[in-house]
Image (cartoon, rainbow, N blue to C red):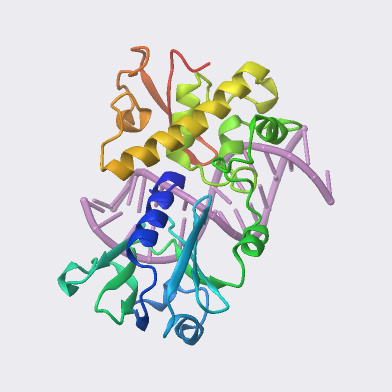
Length: 261
DNA sequence: AATATTGTTCAGCA
DNA sequence: GTGCTGAACAATAT
């Protein structure tokens, strides 16, 4: 599931493969993926080139040499593929940008929960979407994180999942951060002490950066990650306790019944 | 054939 | 009104 680290991977992938090549045509395979009319997408990209890439949370923006940015959200099953040989086309390609040089950039999304959009300006779009700060933004520090936690009362997992509070964490990495921080997903936010808030903040960053780095190397995640042990009854890779399963904020949640308090 | 998944929207409660 | 939780919904492979 594309959360912040995966979308960061897509952003780097697009930046290293698909920039500065003239787009000859747009091959739209399923209109349902568009938030805008087909004609507008074509007008915005045909004859132009992608120039730069930005990411905020789970959202990706690619500038064109025109007035607009391509805006991608990946839902649950979204991905990008750059290829020359048409046989490499992903099975669930929804939009394919055909470059003049014969290469292709496909946006694929089996379950269609993502979307392909156009915006005038990423910052304006981030505001319109109501997104909170990106946890890897260098300007986002412990102070700002503590500010997000203050005057809140719900379950910590619900808060971290809310994109309008902090943008980019999803079900898996929220569970991971709480696991690493020994915090139970249902703990009320106002019950966390200063030390726990600090630990949680640094673990969120550490986990996201580690996953990004491992993805970049094509490496697997550590077996010590909860993500690798998401099954009820499994042994906790940290303390040997038992992994429990429950539902928080409408999402399947795994945690260690022994060390997450 | 039930299940899993995300983000959005709505209903309900304190 | 605000903040929060839970349910329903979209789509589709397994």
